[in-house]
Image (cartoon, rainbow, N blue to C red; front, side, top):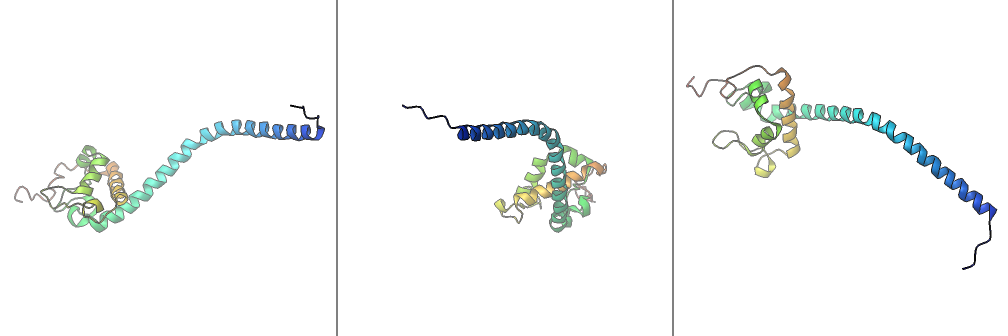
Length: 155
């Protein structure tokens, strides 16, 4: 195969593009560590914002669907008090979501998930769970959370 003749203009253009490529590669190599330094705090801020949004949505959903039995702010009524240290420290988020989704057999707590004939999506159930979890920090000590009105004792 014959060799191409040397082309000064082509050589300069190639060298110019290679220099730009090396410059961009070096800039990226410098930018990525800076990005990695700041990104975790940005993610945490976004996560906190999302949790706040979910909690606010969950509060609205709880008020509309749950207060009739569980009381205002989950303080109890004809159903257990969900705003108690005992309940919130004993129950994992997955358990709370499952109780909302499938209900509690043998009780008045029916299934609320669309998958089980209820009216709430899984995202809405997650929002209610997030709202209830947000109550944990200020939840009162309420050992009788399962029977807040004393109905099981005949009271």
